[in-house]
Length: 99
Image 1 (tube, rainbow, N blue to C red):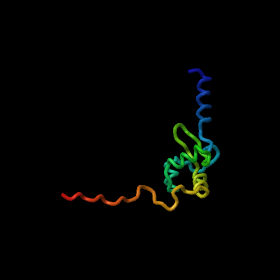
Image 2: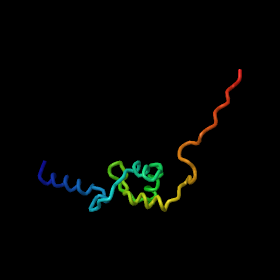
Image 3: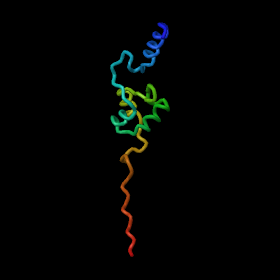
């Protein structure tokens, strides 16, 4: 490996660091971690990121969001199913067939 190639690898490594990490000590979360923080599904957060409503940085295959951005987004974003509990509702038991 030539000396120039070594420097190129180092530059690419530092340029690939997420913006939120540069000069900022704020906590970065994956969408799963962020969903647990605000009691939302990661898929809903992913939709908000793709729509541009929640600022995020993609690092490899993983979306990273700052804790403050998630909390601010959660305060300003209405829940689609407000008032309904998460998960499937309890279903009544099936009637047994006689005979």
